Image (cartoon, rainbow, N blue to C red):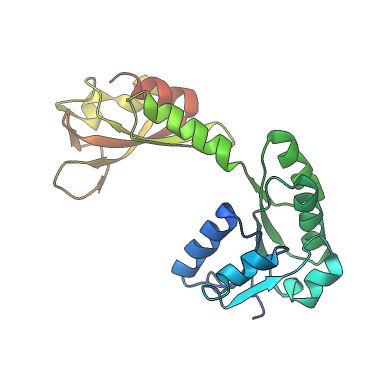
Length: 223
């Protein structure tokens, strides 16, 4: 089960068999990856042993123990340990020491995220924070989906505001007026289409828009 970092379907090590870790592992399986899941809890390992080919009980904070189960053969790993901050940090540190080049780690807050980055995590995920922001934007009623990136850039799905209805994108000049880009248009009963200057917008269309977070928020608020 040796990992080749250049292979998009290479196996992935998932550490921590809580809701987050199992969700990631299942998604990876659906994308045709081999997955090895490991956790300190023997009962959890037993519970999921029929679902995953490789499910192993091991102390993931112990570098030697991880090496013995072949963790050093992976180039990609996901650390889903959340509430046990010490275990999370030591696991990321151990994986980094073993030479795992791409480590995704779950954090419960910004301070935890900062520590994980310092000890070797190449990507840190704050799922509760990200989902909270997403729901907050959707609750306002102006968006049906929202994703924000770390650099202040966002993508949103929103109903076409009145300022764009009945005109082509070129005529409404949204990019210059609102500093956002309309990426695509979804019309009821029709396939999604990528936006072009000649694309005509109706009031019932849904738009995929991108740009600086504050600009995207302001544009969606025009509804």
